[in-house]
Amino acid sequence: MRAAVIGAGMAGLASARQLALAGWEVDVLERADGPRADGYMMDFFGLGFDAAERMGLLPRLREVAYRIGAVEYVDARSGRRTASIDYDRFAEALGGRLLSLMRPDLELVLLDALADAPADSVRVHYGVTYDPAEAGDGGGGLGGGLGGRLAGADLVIGADGIHSSVRAALFGDESQFVRPLGLRAAAYVIDGAPDLHAEFDGRFVLTDTVDRQAGIYGLRDGRVAAFLAYRGDAHDGLDPDEDAPTRLRRVFGGLWPPIDRLLERCPPHPYDDVVAQVVLPQWHRGTTVLAGDGCQAVSLLAGQGASMAIAGAELLADLVGPCRDAAAVEAALGEVERRWRPVVEEKQAAGRRAANTFLPPDRLRLLLRRWTLRASSLPVVDSLVMRSIAGGTGLKGRAGA
Image 1 (tube, rainbow, N blue to C red):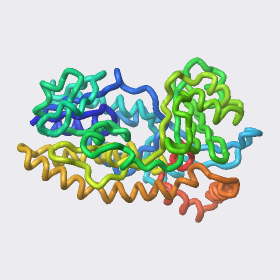
Image 2 (cartoon, one colour):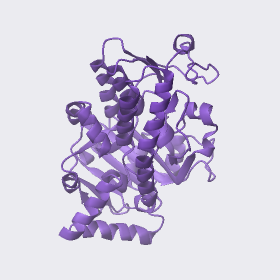
Image 3 (cartoon, rainbow, N blue to C red):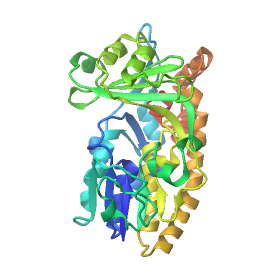
Image 4 (cartoon, one colour):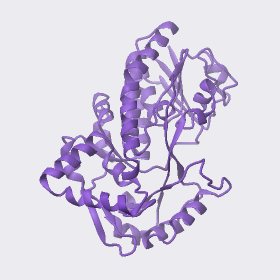
């Protein structure tokens, strides 16, 4: 059996590895020229942590994880700390089953893990686009010069993100399915800023501000990461001709001196996208199926996008892996959706509830968040807050990263 996976992100790579271990031949098509270097720090816990443990990936993930003692909020005018969250207490609420990972590091671990499959069973093709005009037997087009060789795939997995081309080919324009939550998020990493790295090495610091929030933290090898969240989406008057660095400098300029220094070094093409969820009535058609954010985007407000991508990919491979004909594959895809959709819907509901906590729209709600975080140092309140975070959004999801 042969599968074509469109997208070499977390859902795509995890699906490819698990299917190859089940005896499939898999080709992964990725339009980017190589693994992505952008992305922000993520809390990795819950169902994805459990799946990674079953997949034997935890030792490698622990090697690339970061140790974060606390998330600090600061007053943008004075730089004074206003509140903090003890990260160790959050980890304790999860029984220690928590990792802080940069998205590019997680992707590289999954890419390296393809070597666990039989030799030549997985092939990753970078710089290859998906062309829906070249339809294969599975109902998906496979462009970039590989269409002829892959057109007979027994399964096509659309793991090409929230703006999925596979989904568009199957079900129509994304405006029907992508539900913006009124926010945007940007992230990038800079090098060669030793003064900033010295100030923020081992720290995760966020501005305690209304309608926009900037985060800064030091990484390995002297790098410094920026995370920027602000109100706005594709439908509220953003200038489509304004490039991302210009927009970020306009929105965040003057917010806090360390952020101004980061904005001076903003690369030409940082990650900058709408914060949204994906809701659609069906995830597959024939033997073509959507995976990851293409069908189950929970948004960074839910704090478990990477976790859900890997757990969903494991379930997909577990159910489809034993199939040996198209009818069995299609039936298995229906079972994946029946089992996984309620889980996705629960996480999406948690993400919607977190919107005003994540980025307070006014000073009253900012103060409410600040008081809640300060009260979390009290034993009883602490337990309630940490259980709430563990059961819904991640710590840095609540904090703005």
